[in-house]
Image (cartoon, rainbow, N blue to C red; front, side):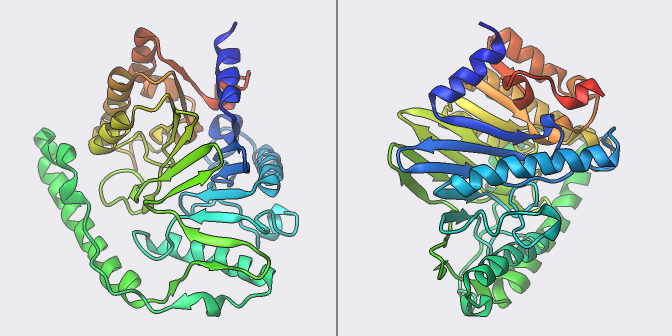
Length: 368
């Protein structure tokens, strides 16, 4: 039996289906989970590849629309949806006329969403409200009726708690890191004192059409024989990453643990790698580092961190299967950039494949 057949068969045994990932030619990280109470879809979103991706624009758009159709079909059939953050490759914009969606694939569902009010950057704050406003409008509700005064609470800065990252030997990069952390702290405090502390919040709600909006951060949910734990917000990349926060997901199917990293960029932070290892997932769906941004928006230090963290996960956790995809599959030299990860997986006997390989094909970027 081929490695690819093993992969697809293993996922099928646990009711997991990979819907679309970057290795298939459009930006996405979406999967479906079969439960005894219906289908659960995680991160039903897709975006076209960036300008540097070596494919003509018409094919990029065609692949995006193919992905939209597949994800939309599954979302329409689902009873519940999880949205880990508000980048467009992780949720469908129901009000976008270019997507040509059916009236509303989220209709009547439980939508477990990243909290749109806290631990969120300005861009995702607006995109969350864009999505919720469209859902309210389609249900006959007024978005303004979903707004509330911000809660009075203390927002804890998570960076001082990153003990492993903070104790790493940074060498000559230490001074630059300290400067970046200082600026990051200032950015965090502006969010606390301004956006989160003063602007109107959106409340959880059941809309007139039966769609239910709940915030998933740090909560657990049960769907018959499947248990789901949504993690508290983790940085979308390095410390104080300006792209914001995401909420990884742990899915327990009859004692088998499937962890979905969302967008951790590697993971780039050592403490997140340790938390993944502590969970001991049997299957890990891991987004790799965005090597297409190297060396301009991803420097050598943080690329090295992402590689080392993935290597440590493989050696210390040894999942039965790793789907290694998303940001990683956006440029031709990705194998070279993470060659140590691929080698260690082979040496340790850990099955590591892209989503395209798991589904029986090749990563599109490898064929261009």
